[in-house]
Image (tube, rainbow, N blue to C red; front, side, top):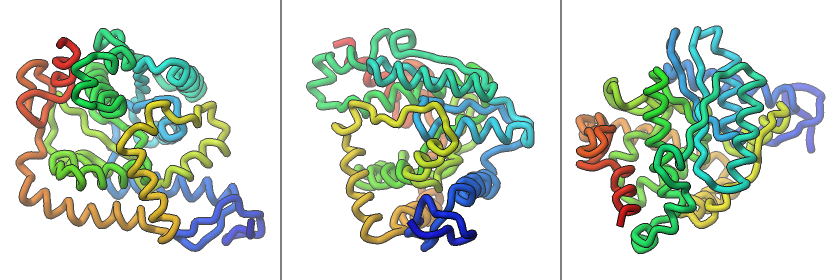
Length: 310
């Protein structure tokens, strides 16, 4: 490993997309600087915000929770960590344990909600339903819908006006590709550092402070900081469509460093044009059944729940 580009210390990472090498001190400083800039430029936080942060116990959400706790006095924000227990066996139990330890260490109020309590079934039980299997729904697609629904609802009930999630650069690029492949314009319009649309009493604005940090760097940062976090992958991840997109993007990045940044940056230009033509559709409708925000007559949560009843 070469020397750091900014001092004589040994580098711990080479950023091919920037053409520099960084030692531990300059790497940590660089990541924090990027997050602060993302928050400032996109105005993700305002003084006196109440911010719910999705804390899974993984590397990304742990970094996010720690960072927000470190700047809460500067913004005078109230921070509440929310963990969702989907019921994925030992994997989730380990993550919840890590989430509890991190929240306690940094003095963050922590709430845990489960699929079993909120939905009546664990994810594994839902995936055994015949109607779910007949529609070839993946565990990840079902889990993401239910998790988003519960996060938004609980964040609102806890008085939050912002919901911070730990999506990193890789996550964002994967979502951009998936939206494009599926021609899902409403989903595409929700991407970016902060969700679009006017204030809605039922829809909590989502913010993504880590959106410019590659996944590899969130993992390295968490390891260097000694966060008690889980670095394992969800057992359902490799069966998802997102996982295939992940591999494609990593291959592109390996051959052409900086590809992920280009995808995210250029998408923002495309989104600006979409907003002009689709802007009226950025505000969520209300689901006929549960009265929660929806993009259609019935929200995706209620659509899945209806399948479980068959």
